[in-house]
Each structure stands twice: as structure tokens, then as C-alpha cells.
Image (cartoon, rainbow, N blue to C red; front, side, top):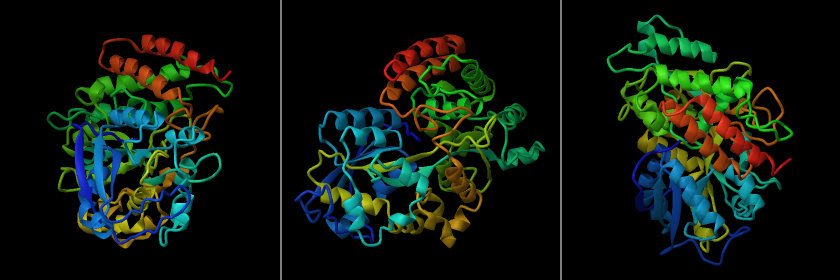
Length: 451
């Protein structure tokens, strides 16, 4: 669940792609998607989204006549904005990026358009090529797709191979968290101004909450038991959180309490940290020599574990169409193009194969050019996605599916408030004990709705 700290940008684009779709399926409006039409797209400000904003005008718009107005926001702001727009039926946006947390909840509320008809009538889209974990996570209870994956991700450890070699350290392919903590201590200060590791500390259920919850899972903790007993201040949850906070305070990046995905990406790519645990989708940016000082020098390992066999999260930033749009045909054309094989080819040829929005299609991993560009991280990414188990991410049964989140509407607020307290602990403004005791009370209030 990547985020981008940047000012609000409105990009007017339009554009391309060799995939021209004829969409008149279920949910379609009477408006044609052709010349003179425009759609409003709200999306999270990650590198892959910035790429599509640049490419759309000269490709998709050129071929279809549909102008695309992009609004790009940091993740926390995006979540607030899209939730407000969709939940209130404001109808400001025709397409928005959401993920595995929102889809089942919003489908149940009747807020999202069923995309089945558009997919089935679009020649060449190849739904069967989509990775099963992505399809499952973006489907409603009726088994129909309510969002199309733009890219998929799990989480993994990324490290500077030159630093490790200089220190005589071999990073295990499947490390434990204690091994990573030990390595972080050894490489802290390996180069002037370099810290041992970058871990998200920015408050937000999809920011700090995502990475921390994977650590909680593998330490044997959970937000709730199967019968909805809150566990936020339980021994396992507390042990995991103290480990995380101690590690980032001792050997983590400067300003850790304000560091999210983008800050850690910058720190890793500019050689400010020796390791980074985060989204697998970050690899493409790290391997881009135009923006990364460590391109070709990064090693990759599976998400660190303690008590579980694996611990990587599962996420997809995906295109969804609110039912309030009156431009369904034009919107669906854009969504299907943006999730297509043709768009991946466009990115590879125009921007470089390492920057392809991967993790959603099996065929991506069979493209010779992509195989070469992703030789160091492609296999780990695909296997991490395939190994992720949203139904059983820890050591005990869960009340809902979800690895780095709890799939109930209240979690958005709960996760954000609890991570605000933990972020304060990272900043040294409160203790982990107080943060989790306060969080326990909030979690108990949520649990009452389901007991």
C-alpha cells in the first residue's frame, strides 16, 4: 500500500494504447466513450500512477478521444477523499484507485459498479491471465470483479548489496526479524549519514499500519481473535510493536515518525539507508538508474518472519468505478486499457521494463524483456504474492480476511488512531505501553459491534 507525499496535483491528460475497447456491458450508461468526452480519475500518488498520467495523453486519448483529468493525492489524503466522495454519492469522480480493503465493504454497500459486462465484451483483455490472489481480493461476495488491478504487490526486504559485501554480511533469502535487527545494527553508519534500515513510521492504517501489522502477525499477534476479542495490548502485539519501535528508533531513518513509503523509497534510492522493508512494487523504482543511485546494486529477500512461514502482505491498487458516474462507457474504456497487457508493453517500451506495473498478470513474468529487467526481484515478488494468505496470515484464526488490515468499515478509523499513537512512540512522545492500552479501548469499542 504505497503512498506519495506530494502536493495535490491536477493533471489533465488524455491518451493512448493499442487496446480499444467496446464496452456496452452491465452498468454501462447511454453516454458513448468517444470524441469530446472526458472523465475524472482520482488516484494515489505512487510512481506507477505518475507514469500513467504522463503516458495517457499521447496514447489512450489519441486513440479514443477521451480526455482524462487526473487528481493525484498522497495515500492518506486519497483514502479520505475517495471515501467521502463514494460514500456520500457525490459523483465527482468516474474512476478511483482503491484496494482489497475497500472492495468487499463498498460492494456490500452497493457503491461500486460490476465490471463483468465490460470485461466480457472487451476483446483481448484476458481475465484468465490475472493472478488469482488479485481477482479474489477485488471480487465481491457474488464472485464478480468490482475493481481492475493496476498493479499487485506483497512486501519484502530490500538491501544494499555493496554495503553488505563491505561488511561481510550475507542476508538470508528468508530472514527472521531478529536477523534483520542484528544486521541493521552492524550496517548503521556503514557510510556517512547512512542508517541501518527504513521502516514506515507515518501514521495511517495503510502506512505504518500495513508494515507493522505484518510484524504483529508473524510475532503471533492479531488485532482481534476469531470471536472478536480485542488484542491490541496483548503480549504478542506488544512484543511486536516494541520490537518495531525499538528497531526504527535505534537504527532507522531520520524523521521516522513522518516517513511513509515515499520517504523510505527516497532514502533507499539515495543511499541514506542500507535496508528497507516495504512493498514489492518498490523494486521497479529502485532499479531505475534515472532516479536511483542503487540501481543494479539492490538485493531482495522475502518478508522477515518469526513464528509464521511467510509474512508478506497482499495488496493491489485497482481501478474502481463508482455507481454515481454517468460516463460509465468512457470510464470503463480507460480502466480496461490501464490494466491491459498493451499498457504494460507501452510502459516497458517507453519508460523501461523495470517500471512495468506488474504483480497482476501471469503473462508479465513470461515477457523476455521484463524477465531480464526484473531478474533480481521478479521471482520473489511473484512468489510472495502467491504465498500470501489473507485468510490465515498469523498463528490463530481471524474474524475476517486481510493480512495488513481487518476487513470491517471501522478499521479505517481504528487503524489510523492506533498508528497515530504508535507513531508518537516512534517520535519519543509517548510509550508503546500507553499507545497500545489506549488502542485496546478503541478496539474493544469496535469489537462490541460484532460480538
